[in-house]
Image 1 (tube, helix red, strand yellow):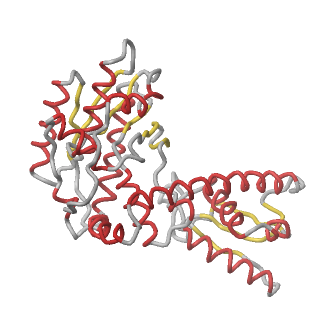
Image 2 (tube, one colour):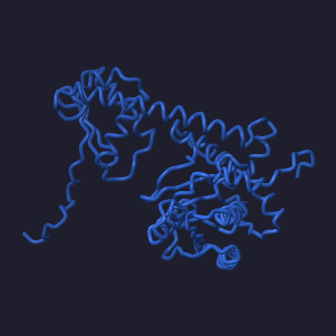
Image 3 (cartoon, rainbow, N blue to C red):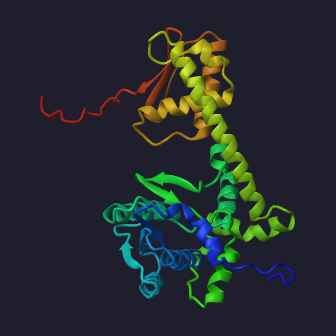
Length: 347
């Protein structure tokens, strides 16, 4: 530990009121509480904030036991005891069924959000609140940077978004983790330390271990968080430009399907990428294509046009083609040998 590092300031009751101010008129909220310091601080601060109000949202704390660690069940029970002492209803949900051999963190995250969304709907809660911090944002940006993400990916996590049809709120995205730990330490609230957070078998853990080295060069969590904020702003501006480009192409479309290929080709490449991504998503029958796949398809399209060749390619269950000088995206036909649903195997 760096003895010269500044001492983290705990979150005050006044600051918590400011962080949670937008929640006053929400009927009910689900707090995602794993038992680690960040989420326990969320539980502690939200409970005290709710108690200070005459009328406020009903709070439901939910802990998801992924069944991956023996200690997780004990940690969930500790959260339940803390929630009870704070006057907050608590539920423990379990991720059941077989677990994947690879991609465990992503699968666990997807399962967790699905379970949280179900809990929210059953409690008539319009949103889930998570305790992602500035440190988590920095790690997310660094991870996506290492994978070559585009502007949308490097914008990181949003403070407000939606998942499984339920709102997702992240009030601590600009708060360093150390401040949440300091808050609990001052209040003498116990929390768990998940060993998988330090397991080098996982990419995020390895990148987390690099953060002190990067911080010594000026690339600390605050810097990455600021980068995410700026790219989020740029991404929003590009989306508005894409909205305008789409409207323009539709107006000039002459009532036909798809886009006029000549007009489409005059657009900036980033706008072309976004337009094509939207068109693919409009009739998606498979997994969303990666940014690199869309870029490769656009290069092939440009080359085909420069050489005067016909163009037709499939991507993510869709067919992208140029027909009568129009760029058309439609669901790909069934593969040969794949019997249409509902047809009998007998002639």
